Structure formats: C-alpha cells, structure tokens
Length: 171
Image (cartoon, rainbow, N blue to C red; front, side, top):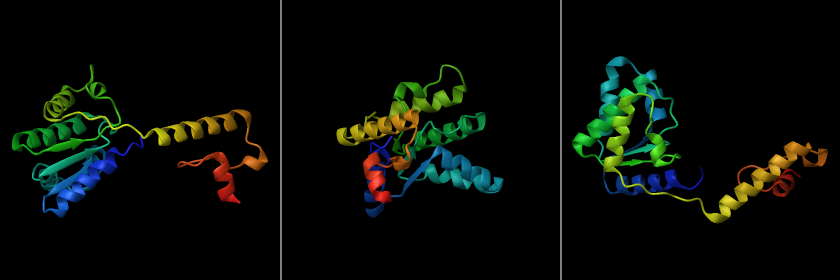
C-alpha cells in the first residue's frame, strides 16, 4: 500500500543481520513458488531454514492463493516457529480481523490464531502528503479516462507524479 511496512521490516532485518543474527525475509508467495520449483527431497531442508532463523519476516501475508497445501505449509512454518520461540514479523495489507476466515481451511485459522497470540499488531499509516498525492493522481487519471485522453495529454501519471509532471517529463 506504499506506507513503508516492508521497508521498515527490511531495515530491522538488515540491522540484526549486521549484528550477526540469522534472519529470513520472505513471503508465503515466494515460499510456495520455491516449493513448486524444487525437488521433493529438498523441501524439508528449505522449510526448516525458517524455523532455524532467529527472526522470520513474512511479507505481504494474505495475498497468496489459499489452498489446502499452502495452508499446511503455513501451519507447519508457524507451528515450528511457535515451538522454537522464533520471533516473527508478519506484514499484511489487510486488517488483522480479516485474516481469519469464517469459511475455509481451519488449518489456516489455527496458524493465524497462533500468529495473533505471538504478535503485537501495529498499524503503519501512509504519510499524509504521499496519500494525498496518490489520491489526487488517481482522481486525475480517472477523469482523463472518463473524459477521453486528449492528444496533448497522452501520458497518465504514475509513481507519485501528477499528469502535468508526467507530461513535462515526456517533453
């Protein structure tokens, strides 16, 4: 969402790594993609590295496709980290309560409940200036799309610039 959650966690991991701690920064999406690419015989070693870390960061939690297999993997990682008292930072773009599913795999709910019992929730808000600029840019782009883009306005603004800034950069 652009508020700096992943950046903050990466700074923590970098600082601890510089001090000699074994840290892992990953996401469930990366874990699932890696598991599908490696051989079956290497999967246990791959998964063990997360519970053998001294800090585990799971980034973008909740955006991965939820399957029975991914829920088993999540529950395994969280369970082992829970047993070994491995500290975890879990970053999600979603509100905490929305991570528990009323329907769906109960193994995921067990993992989420374990995470919630061990984690302190913090909300990282997007700085006012950035969120206002993002909202203005979105509004400008929507107006251009709705009204039709005129030949002199063939550039839509992205990454923090307004349409006039995008047009100037194009010239």
